[in-house]
Length: 536
Image 1 (cartoon, one colour):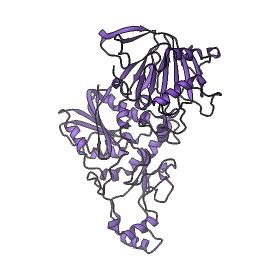
Image 2 (cartoon, one colour; image 1 turned 180 degrees about the vertical axis):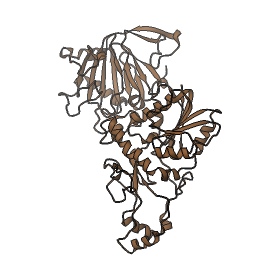
Image 3 (tube, helix red, strand yellow; image 1 turned 90 degrees about the horizontal axis):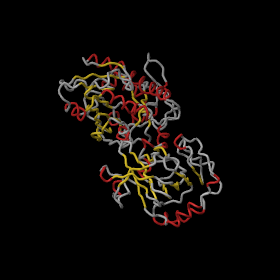
Image 4 (cartoon, one colour; image 1 turned 135 degrees about the horizontal axis):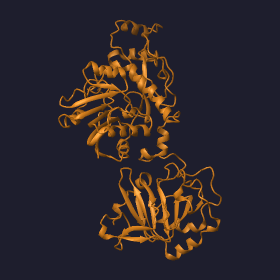
């Protein structure tokens, strides 16, 4: 097998050490001072293990940086590490070593070494016997990789951060029969396979302890980026639900009429997806809002659902079928839909687990072969001077009001909320509405400034509520503002909606965690990342 079939970033270097060096290394291990594996899973018990530099914790695949082990790495590793540095297999000298001894029949469960615990490169030297190590991608693709005796495994990039790796507990491995073809993924050709009895194997796994948060390109499986994206008051799924209730559900209920007035023209690529469905197809619009997609294709049987009762009532006024429910639990029979759409919904869920749960619920509704179209806000926005033609509302510009007038309004507290959320006079609500926490945004979440780049994936986005009525007294009020009068017109109420904006590839990776789904297409449209899913 050629190296190209290996997971990206994975290398296997044969004969890193000579037979004499192998013997010296094995004889250097003092197994008399045997260690008990702390917090071990059942499959790890009775396996010999030694730690140097830092203790590797098998319960969380991590180390305690504050408790280094005395003595550092043993001297008998210096020659190996010097060779790896010279050959460019690693770029930093490791400071953590785990030595494992595997008897035939022993293994280790599939895992990813915690992103925040170690630097990119992880290397493992196989001594005493060869072994097959299994790698698996989140989308289900797997690779069985033969690690020959005295070979070095180098994991970096995607193979280190995204693919799980493990050793299946068994006494025989299925390997390629042909010599010289052992390195790489095992072929599916059963005529070229044979059983290989396992021997006693010892692995030297070297890692470099990481001192800073991880900023890899795989946020869906990165603990550092999960923590960064998680809100400081998120201690449970209940906390996430409370956040969404205050900064999504209650907000949309309060702004529903004004929101509906700004949403009237369907996006062309969503309409194209709907028109591509067969005549008479049953389609669910989960998070339908004011129902702007429910009436686009007369030859489809479409129904919608939304968390906002007021928006559902607006759908009813238009003659559409819609009902109130949460996207996490849609009261529709499994496999009853030919297609689903979820447009600008999933980004309102505040944890990875809840976003994934919504995707699971969408696919549950689909029959085999059914398709789902999902849109989420993109962190990578393309800002233009003109407002999108698909939004009906028009915002008063500085040019129309005049710069002096705009400056006067800014001085009186009518500017856009910027930076970290702070209690301010413009963060109020209309009379008669029930009081909720949206009046004072949480200080742990930044408030996004309109038409600027996103500085964080988890943000509050202001909505300036307008009742649609023209205020004839406005010029007089503005004049008073310019004159410095205290009688300034009260600013429009501002509500804050929670969003998790998606990085490029994040939505696709999230979808690939579902076993029964194939990502048929992914693209960028109208400032959104979009995927078309097909249920297998």
